[in-house]
Amino acid sequence: MSHHTKLLIGILSFAIVGANSTYCFAAPLTPKVLWGNAMEGKGLPKHNYLFGSDLFSVSCASVGNCSAGGNFALNAKLSQAFVVNETNGVWAKAQPVPGFTRRDASENTQVYVISCPADGDCSAAGIYSVKHNSSLIFVVDEKNGKWGHAIEVPGSARLDAGGGGFITSISCPTAGNCSAGGILPVAYSTTISGAFVVDETNGVWGTAMELSGPPSFNHNGAGIDSISCASAGNCSAGGTFPKSRHGNAPSFVVNETDGTWGKAHEILGFTKLNLGGSSEFRSISCGAPGNCSAVGQYQQKSGVTRAYIVSEVKGMWGTAFTVPGLSKLNGPHMSSLTTISCASSGDCTAGGYYGNGDHQIAFIVSEKDGTWGTAMVIPGLAVLNAGHTSYMQIISCVSVGNCGASGTYSDASGNAQSFLVNETNSTWGPAQAIRGLAKLKANSSGVLSLSCASPVSCSAVGDFSAPGNNAALIVSTEPHK
Image 1 (cartoon, rainbow, N blue to C red):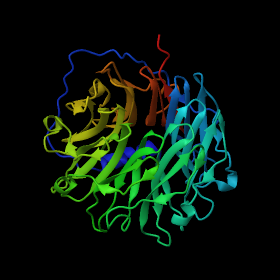
Image 2 (image 1 turned 30 degrees about the vertical axis):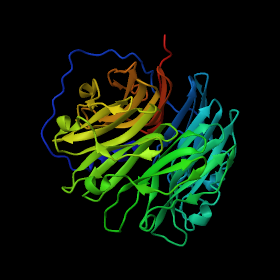
Image 3 (image 1 turned 45 degrees about the horizontal axis):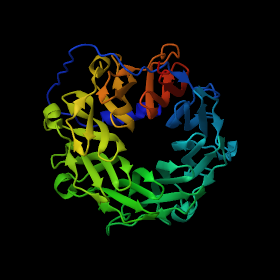
């Protein structure tokens, strides 16, 4: 089963109640940004084992210059991490991450996140295993177009005595200056995990450190879900931390200022909002140092989940609030925000989904000059979403009013497919189905990551499933004429 199919099944597992939804669009819209045909990743093995090959993350430093990473199957049980570069608009063949050999392969070996602040200068991170399939975490840097050797995250073995760690997010504001975060089991414990961060400064990775926070922080499991750095040494991150082993898991945020990480603290307002106890921190983006926004979902006392937004202004985090206008679309029913991207301070776009009856509908909401607008459905998506199940996966905004985005919908046959959509000059075009899937004989597709280098230039990666072939997927916008 491919990664995107698992994700769709996970989304479908939410209980959705309510009335039907009605779409109204005056006339068919013409996209200002046209996506090209999907292509299979080059240089990857051609077998249909348990996972095939996947691309999990992509980052574009400039138009036609991107890097992506993922994993491919060596056989039915082992996989290998790989990276692939696009240079001047041409995607090269995939290459195994330097430093790994066949004996380092495991079911878990993969590049999971990547960030490219300049052409040919990227950093990536992921997991690997050398014994008992217990995952360890690594980072690897590309300098001047050449990938170096992967290294185990310094200090992670001290925290992660038994293995099982995971890097969930990485952000590099400039070449050689990055921050990453995730989850590591606390030393000598097989059940308790802790949130950690690790910084790279001037090309040298420092030591992983376990975050501190409220008294219950890291005692029952905590982890970083997303991190964003506006400049070197100035980052913000967030995740969740169970206050007990029996529920009540609020979301938290934590800031790094001038290279020093502070203490994590519960998001303000959760005491009143999160009465059901369970929450998810999904995504964070910083438009400038000390000016960030984050999104996720909390649980009402009734058990219904609702989307939230929380913003930081001049280094001070405000109170979480619900999405403006969403109640008109969805009434009292379930919703979640899954992704956010901020082009500048007070100018962000977020996306998610809401449930209404047996439908699940993707939506977007934008902030302009510090004020959040009203939630809206994705233009043109109703035509594609014959199976009535859609959600937003990723948004990438390069400037105010200019973003690219992708999500998943269910076609008439019930197969998971991905859509692509762009905002240009503050106007969203229609959702576009991925072109070229028929040539690949694909019956389903999943975009897992998307990055835009300009308002009209983006690349997306993921995977597709076809008879006898589960393979990595790449699709880019056509050159703007």
